[in-house]
Length: 532
Image (cartoon, rainbow, N blue to C red; front, side, top):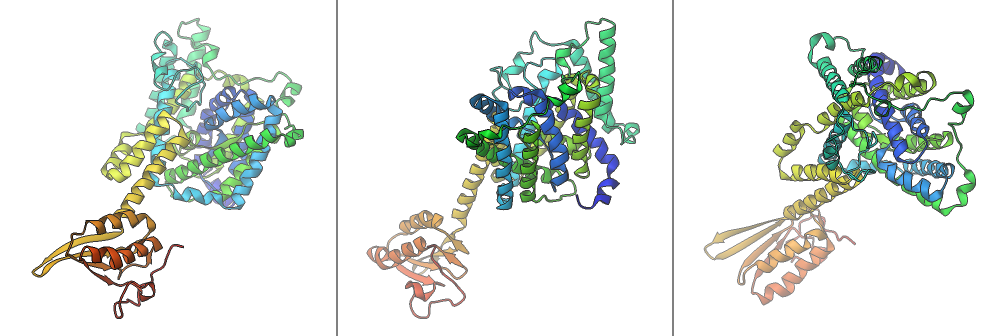
């Protein structure tokens, strides 16, 4: 860790935000482990390692690493296919090695080619998902696990149909807890008196008050009492031996199993892509606009996954939900992520029973506000005003993330962005203008600075549309690159097609070496090359 003094100068803000992330991460770690078919503590181990180890090694100031919902299906299928959790841990260890290699070969630079509107669309899409997924928890319906971000759920419902399942499952106690928590969270940012108490996070106050309220309901036998299945359910070790049994080693004899290598490669690729996307999003969120070395991040993630596997933990990525919670809570440096990891560790060892009194409805209230901030109407309006070339990739990414998953959503946004770039490139390849003269029509085609093979079809169509007995001037004075395909097209047009249609062709600015121009027409300042 560099610049320790500056990190500790922000200790108050980072401790406060680390505490908030800890409260959010605890049920997510457990929920993702449960959905993955893995031991519950494997999710907590992954969260601890992601916070402490990756937090220490990473150069990102606000991103938070832990078990990811995007890997749930891969983990579940892999454990089932391999038939053993310890063999699966071997695959996680190998995935970490692969990520280290990706970092050393500088694969992290690929994230620089993701447009901002796609990143913002991804964030807004995740915001919509978080909001939709937390509504059932806010009403006391917890059938779907906490932390699920997939459109199609394990209970055969989806993000929208799950909302209709609330009918008949609403708990008044959960609604009351949600409303009280939302009131506290909103008041903490709106009322001047609470704004001054920066050290105490609003989320902690909401958790404490909601826990006390529910405890009163339980002790008084009230019908509003929230039962244990709607509270945080952290396993409680009853002995030192049971605590030791939580940590398991990978079965390294499985190195010869080809399935292990395929799974390891899959995990490394998916985890690396999700991490790079999250890091780009984190840098966009950062109010100080600091940039993260993504190659260092891949190395940190690789080491984190190796350590997690050696302790019996799940694979991890940098995670948008926790990162957003960290940023919203006011994190200043990566010390916040490390503190969240330390708090996870201490909570497991010291106060698991107390943590099991936290209502999921309270945590739903925290996440509802995070979801709203990510997908705020102001963000959508902002991209709408930027025009269709910014808005369409943004909204397409948003909708695809909500209706499919993060990777497919970003892939669609990228595809649309590339189509727009190609379309714009085709339009900018040349200017086609026609001027009227007394002695006939002279048509000017001014080539742009770069003309690639992608422009061939458009230029071919333009040349084909030129009427007979016309005069055309093709100007390459400002051009620094012309693809070989386009040069051949122009050469054929000048020597064959134009003569058949009685069209006079004059070429300006082309290098004589290509055999397109007559003596005196060459422009020494123009360099024409092929794309071979």
